Each structure stands twice: as structure tokens, then as C-alpha cells.
Image (cartoon, rainbow, N blue to C red; front, side, top):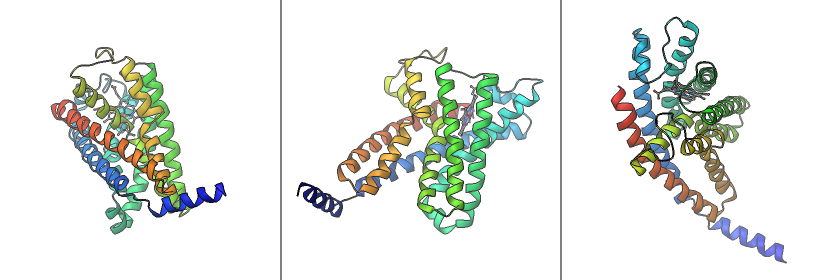
Length: 278
Ligand code: HEM
């Protein structure tokens, strides 16, 4: 009897399920994220692609402490590949997700998809080599965290391609979104850091000289190794599948909160990181 009542309740909850707020919050977050990633993409093109293709490699060093190192051809090549191809990730990622582009230009979607997935693997592996051979800013926690992210990227890239080849399109869409989230990790890190600096008006919880401290350990963990974006995405998938209204509202509110933080961070990163370096 109890079982019957519960299943009747579930059925009526499903019948009354309203996904409007969840759809709205996801769309709003995606619009702000797309604008922010494309701004990052423009920065990558103007700073790294222009300098690389004109042979002005020293320009990398205005941002990267160990970007161009004279007489280290192999190391420089890896950095060059990483920063030049990074633009494909941040510009191509949102393009792959916009439904209208997918529906109206399926051939473009398929080709960009192949390029995106291969690029994601190359950029991640190049980044991994850079962290562990040349070294970079930050401490060991940050280095381990970003390395874990590169493992996610490679695994999710493989599943995205596999599900597309097998024509499991629902699965493909889910893996592609997971891949987008982990590929966006480095962007989330910059945006999260700049939002934190704007909100606190000071470098609270870390030392800007050594670029280490509890805040950066937590930030690198929640964007790279235990990505909150991925947890939220799974909540979004589950709320939609189970048509669970309460979970749907909870997920929407968290997404809206992150949308505000993202908007603040995009503004901060554009004004503080990207525009001044162009
Ligand atoms: C897949 C998405 C990624 C994108 C779009 C990306 C983009 C970039 C960009 C644009 C830079 C230049 C720094 C700047 O101007 O802000 C950079 C630097 C760097 N990236 Fe990535 N990256 C990605 C993933 C990774 C991963 C997964 C790793 C490590 C496992 C990594 C390691 C590095 C390192 C070590 C640097 C040099 C930083 C320094 O010397 O201070 N990146 N990346």
C-alpha cells in the first residue's frame, strides 16, 4: 500500500514537473560562459597566435615565466603547440554545444568535433609535459590537480568520439558536455580567481608572490580534480531524467549563483588579465 502511494506520488510529481527554471538557468550560464570563453579565445589569438606566426616568440614571456627559453627547441615547440591550439578549445567548445549550429550545420559539427577532441588531447598532454618538465607558477597541489584534469580530458574525449561513432547520440551529448566542462577547467580557474579578487578587493587566502595558499589549493581542487562543474552537470542530467522538481530547483539556484560569479569573473579576467596583455 505504502509502495503504491509513493509510486502514485512520484507519477503526479512527474506529471507536474516544470523544467523552465532549470532550462533558463542553464541557458543563461551558457551564454555568459560562451562570451567569456570567446574573449579568452580572442586574447589567445592576439597574444600567442600572432606572436608565434610572426616569429616573435619572446612575446610569450610577457605572460609566461618559462614560455620561450632560448636553445630549447623541443620545450618551446611544446609550449607553442599548447598556446596556439588552446584557441580551438575555447572558441570551438561553445560552438559545438549551440543547438542551432549542430542542427543546421551537421557536417561542420562533425568536423569541428573531430578537430576539437584531438586538439583537447594534444593540448592536455602538452600541458602535462610543461607542468612536469619546465615547471610553472603555483605549488605541488595545483600541479597535481591540473594533471588530474588532463587525465579526465583524455578519457572523456575518447568516450565522446566512441559514443558518436556508435551513434548513441544521447550518450554522445552527455560525454561531450562532460568534456566541455573539464576542457573549461583552466578558464574556470582564471574566472574564479578574478571573481574572488573582485569580491574581496585583495588577494585573500593566498600569497600573490609565490602564487600559493589555501584559497588556490581549494580553487584548483574544485575546478580541476573534483570539478564542481561536473557535479552540477550530473545534477542537471539527473534532475531532467528523474523529473524531480525539488532537485531541479536546487540545481537551478546553484547554477544561477555560479552564473553571477562567472559574470563577475569574466569581467575581472577581461579587464585585469586579457585586455592589458594584448
Ligand atoms: C584544455 C584546455 C586548456 C587551455 C584552453 C589552456 C590554455 C592555456 C593558455 C592560454 C596558456 C597561456 C597562459 C595565459 O596566457 O593565460 C596556458 C599555459 C599553460 N598551461 Fe594550459 N590550457 C589548457 C589545459 C592545460 C592542462 C590540462 C595543463 C596541465 C596539465 C596545462 C598547463 C599549462 C601550463 C604549465 C602553462 C604555462 C603556465 C606558466 O608557465 O605559467 N594547460 N594554457
